[in-house]
Image 1: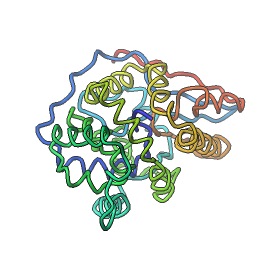
Image 2: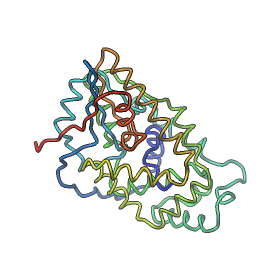
Image 3: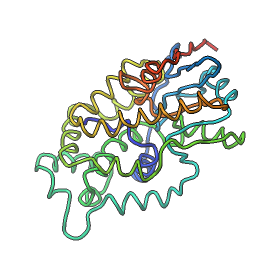
Image 4: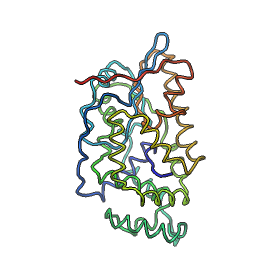
Length: 305
């Protein structure tokens, strides 16, 4: 499992908030060329429409303004569906929860569970990104894995406050649009805490072979260009080393997300669904699931305005 881009938005928010405390002097990523495609789909039944937008939870100013097609679809929708409503979570409490559940007590340390080579790489990571080595020493594998994944992205100029789901949550709050949470905080915490020491070691080994900040820029470029194939490749890279974890973290969640979207397609409200882009793409993604259930799912063409 090489990257954690498909992590639950709430727990990622907690880690991102922690990581933000040690990420200083971040530079904004360069702005890519205007996109013609997007991680954005229209779902139709006989008489109903819903919208699917793949998000990246950490964004940058270069991703805005968003295409008019997205903004218009959001305005026409009556409900915003997200993984978790991070605007109504006590982030200080979330940070405390991450530290309380993600740190070893007593004499036990992370070094008791990883190889000497992994320890050296993690200590080098701490030195590079200004994270106190003592903090990594006491982290459980899942917390260390998330920090290794999140901190370089923040260093590259990406912020939780500029994430796509955060953007639409803010708009929904201003317009009093109904917000529906697809998942719960407990569910997301249970999933990420399933990251084992073995998974961490594989992630750290992969990080040593690829510049994680450059990876963040590539991820952002894929989103802005609407390159679903590249996004699918990212998810495959993330999950190739941990099949069972991938099933719980991605595939099973995709099914639930599709179920919730379908409830709205059968109901009276028009839904604007914003979940991690990795959940939309691939043979087991929300887009393909809804197609298999008989719905018409088509990419939304993005104009040049």
